[in-house]
Length: 124
Ligand code: HEC
Image 1 (tube, rainbow, N blue to C red):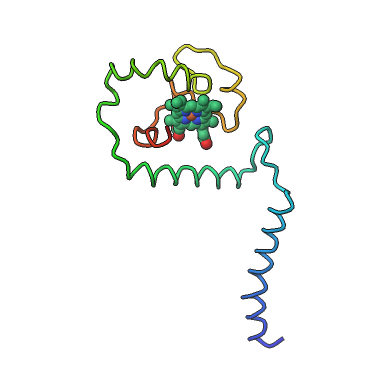
Image 2 (cartoon, rainbow, N blue to C red):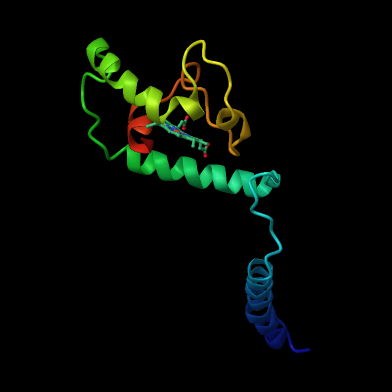
């Protein structure tokens, strides 16, 4: 094979094989996305990095309201937190729930897990 032809085979053939292989992998339903089947390390890394980078880039553009650590506001929001969030994220001295234990990824226990204010505000 001529060097020019060999170069063409590499430049066109390899990307074609990679694209066709990836498409076959996805279309064939090879990867199990069920929440009761742990992700492989590379997929976990990919998803976690995509999630973290997505949050960081958007949270950085937010104007976070001031006074979020004001005690009165925290007490006002406590009822909403108990109704909408505690089932997954727990609260101080609250026992684990089916949701806090059974989800994948596991919801962080927000009574113990410190979160950056801007990131948390964007996520919520
Ligand atoms: C059905 C369960 C569920 C409910 C209800 C829920 N969350 Fe979550 N939350 C999760 C899970 C799971 C994650 C982790 C996602 C991940 O790691 O990819 C998460 C992530 C978060 C995070 C990001 C934490 C971090 O360190 O990045 C915040 C903040 C948060 N939730 C706040 C809330 C608030 C406030 C509410 C109520 C308004 C709420 N969540 C309701 C399951 C839940």
